[in-house]
Image (cartoon, rainbow, N blue to C red):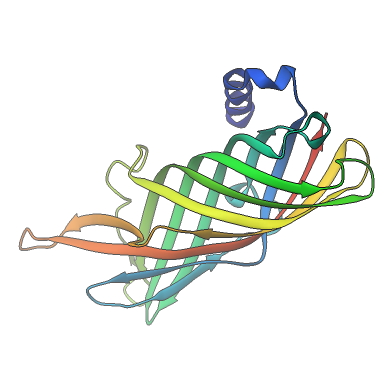
Length: 218
């Protein structure tokens, strides 16, 4: 139900859906999705997605507007996506869970958006994320508390994608894209204070994935 509400809100935001083709897509990471985590004790621990294909914890939902037949080589719209990654260093496991709300602008190069045609796409996106992170000590059977205020926006996201779209019919498409975060300094976080009152900090960076999207366009 919560995803239906979000999609309805996105539709209300985009009045141009009345005068241009609208693309509705559901995406999932495939083959590779990762981020590196570093803090004072560890460096570049690689976290990767842990769920299966089209698992809810790693799904993205997007709406994009614009079409070549009306002379529009650019699309614009938004995406809501979930990210669920985990990794391990020694006896410590790291969990990264996030939901991002992104605005996207996309360029398209194709002969036409018609059945069995191929298009090349590239986009930039920017938005806000709600990140929750958690650390587990396997040998001590204990888990950290969740991130403070993890239900609020606590980082920004900027990035880009390049990929290929295949228009299987005049209303159904499949695409594959490579996505990378462009945040130079990564996603910085603060977790619970140390016993002496000082604050520990960590950084998630080099967020990347290969995504497959299936969807409809009208």
